[in-house]
Image (cartoon, rainbow, N blue to C red; front, side, top):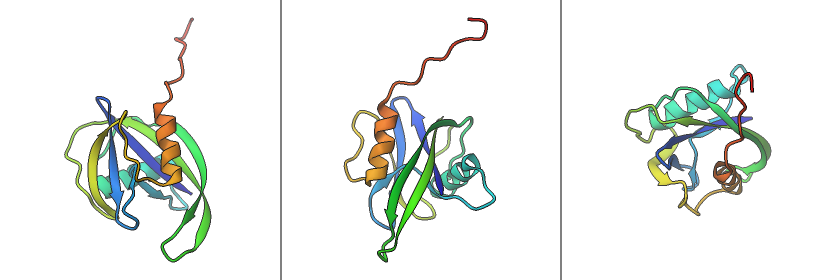
Length: 134
């Protein structure tokens, strides 16, 4: 099981270029057995970009297959969140080779099938929320 967070800033999203396969992705990775998905997403964001964020908003839970470089394939479930940028300078760390802000309407094509699904969910309008007492 994994978790990640799409950090949003003025129509842009922060992505990392993965060091293992060179593809662009949201910051994220594997969840430790004792972590909640939100805690894992925050840890992975900090490890891969040096950033921390405020409130996390669930984007979705995505089922997919992941193939490691050694050819081992596993079924994977990734909890993806969004959060607004809270400041600081993103820098590549851990297994991230590069960080970059991308316009949400011009996201990269060099992504995994799972990441393409995250991008599709990001393009969906947010759900309408009713105010208390409405």
